[in-house]
Image (cartoon, rainbow, N blue to C red; front, side):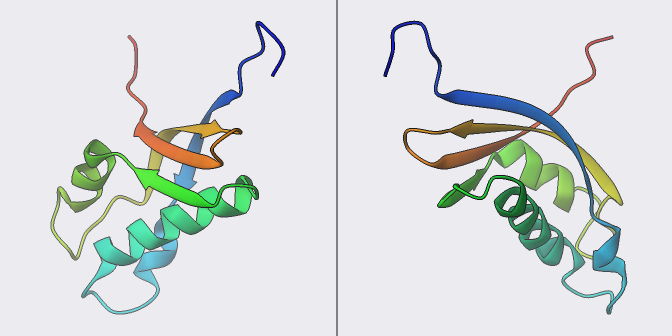
Length: 94
């Protein structure tokens, strides 16, 4: 790799999770986590592995299994060398 070039791409996304409300009430939070992984794989096609930070997981499960958030703002860090996408919770910097 050339000197000075970074192989890590950081992008902020707002991921819609409202599709998990289409089916039954049980396991909505687990479906939201799976939907988040699918979203990241769809937008970063070269990602062979998606790693979700524990803060993101706790934020989704915060209101129990039946009421996950409708959307979540995340920062996706994609390492092109290792082909790994890491998902972090985006914080407002106000």
